[in-house]
Length: 370
Image: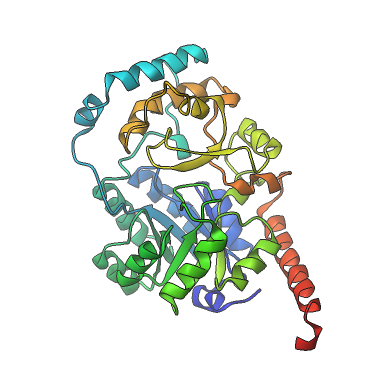
């Protein structure tokens, strides 16, 4: 399983693994892939600490950082944004807390951390630029832009440091904008995946993007959970794969045990694409909280970042009370293939083995080509 992207990035297998957990990122890079650290939900100071740890752990092995560089953004102070939240939405959320009997936070409750930590203005360019400055001060070899192309000056600064730049996309036009801005590779993220994905399935999206941006390499994302799917992605023209959900329940994951148990029990039909968490369509495990936002009397979720400002306190209370049935768990439809807790190294070994078996099976269908 070696493509040109392996030589381009200095990795053994063309498997990129995204995670908000530094331990997972380090383990993926150590196992021969390329771990990518999600920087959207932490402050620049916290990012600096996490990347310092990764530098020490990886000792020159390549890793990446994913930063949200939104093509559009909102203006206004936190207080102004808070005041703009409609009272009807506030009453609806208060009603949900009462319906689900969510207890108030105790006075000494710790602040949330990680992916569900305090909201950063992900649609504010200053947050993304601060994260980029921190990234440039460390040994990361890859910078990935999500929600919009990296500004031209950012791409130039990255290239001056020998870094490669990638862009997440859910449509051909998005991929083309990344390439026009100077991106070295594109990640085509299909509808099956978690995060802010496409309205188009991976099977359809990947070859469209490959044809549109060739010869720029493309990674396939969305629904990649085994070696057969990697073989399919390469057959579609991708040079490698971008994985995320696969690492939620690995041994190195920082997700709570209750969340991991939910993931292990879930099937591919147990996810929901909802705007109820951040204001942007995002795939989560279905739970009573996000299902309530689909009820006939529910208001339309607010645009980002207002929706997250509206519900973040409720999610903090849910986490503090360990109400696992209401946990907001981001996951793709590939969750149905995640049935046990395994180490990152074992997962990558299985991916490579399954890929080899798939390629042997395909070769047997056309023996005259041997």
